[in-house]
Length: 173
Length: 456
Image (tube, rainbow over all chains, first blue to last red; front, side, top):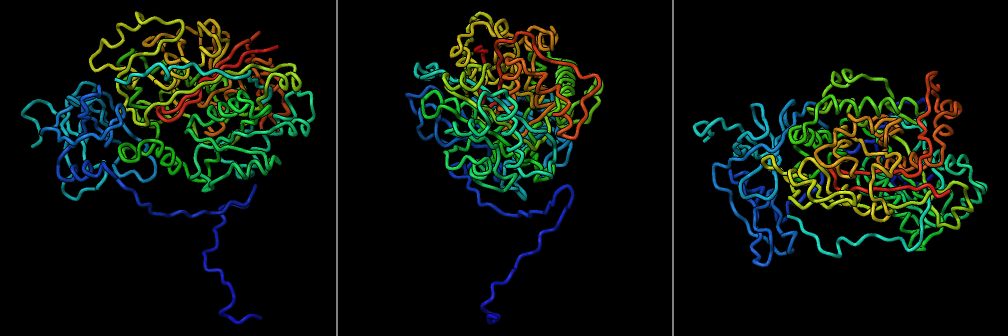
């Protein structure tokens, strides 16, 4: 018999058997936290927490695409040159391009269901920007205004959301 | 505006012809505890080797394989990297080289494309395209989240964590732009669940009415559960060969053409572009397409990757008018809306008139070019890595006049613990000569279009 301190011991937790028929099925726990960088898009996510919507623009005079990108990207896909940051003027007003009402969401959802997802056209932006509507019922062509979670930010894309603009006096200040 | 240059438009060309000769499937089900995934692959592999009327014995055919393309969508369901090595070993094909293929929902199509490239280039004379997925390792909502990581993790995934929520905005926009009714969408679901009723392989067969579909629970408005594919455990195998080997192995080989297209992961980033025209289209057809405010192409209505793949596949195969020249199609109906969107991309109807493909009856058995007689993804399966192989096999069996053999034999039903329905009917398309299938990922991030042509 080997001395106690030389024996290789089992230190895990026995796998839970979920079912035995028609085959043995065990539980396979998987609980990990990844590290994820926002990389060169960090200014965008930091901007949201300060109530700013930052987009990127290609300033290469030889490139054809000089409109803004939102979601931003650090490098232009057309000429592959670095782009520059630009803040959208406040209030940020867009138009609903399309929408969906999420009733059944996947594991880990951080919003109460049902809610509306909106895809928003913004002036001067070559892309369409996805977000969610805090309240109200969207329709295609409806004007919406960007709001920011500057208090207790999530440090994710959920720090921007949209609210309906009924007319100019209804804008959220 | 995305603009492409001459070299980007080069039509792919095989250095030598490629043929499909045999296929094998499994029972497709939500949860298959009785078998591990490599054991399920073996079921498909055996059916491919033993039941396709090959002229050599299974062991002799195995002895000809010199390349494997292995499709699996996601490692994180099984928590197993390099499952390809386990499968190749389990099938007894070590140490033949296998390449793992990953292009989301289009993994199966990309797997066939990779195997075809191996044949066309001369790397292999006989290549196995094999795909699988085992999604039941996690509960459904976790599975929904895993799949939603095929949306952009920084800008999209947190906004729903379920894939129907990335298709629902397309359904809303498409309905607004092109007058698509909820009933037409529901008809796709009714049709594909019904065709699955005649398939022993199917996971979600059912005789539903339009009202049943519209009354079924909502996933993401406007998409109901009966309009969505489910998660599946299962596998599929397809055998590809060069011309000489193809005729040595079977009296019923089919020539294969397949091409792909890719587009941005985020629908948001789809900038307007000119529509690449299919051989039967003219620019005049689309002059009015952008008349509504904010309209762009492909926008939320269409898939540039599908159009790009079709643009190349039709030219590879010399097809000049798809609706006239194709006898059937198998489309990637992960959702009713994505099925309908695809009708325009592959030219079954001009853009803007997609619903007419259903409403005209063309899409039904007995119609001009029936779609998804296999039951498709909505009715039969979406074991993601296997799906684009399954669809191709269903096309192959139709062209080989073997629909009844592989769907009507009561022993196949019984081997899956099922009973062949009393009112089973054959969905064999008479004298089918040419078939097309689509394999599709993300919200259109990767798409392959494959064409099989009877060569006997």
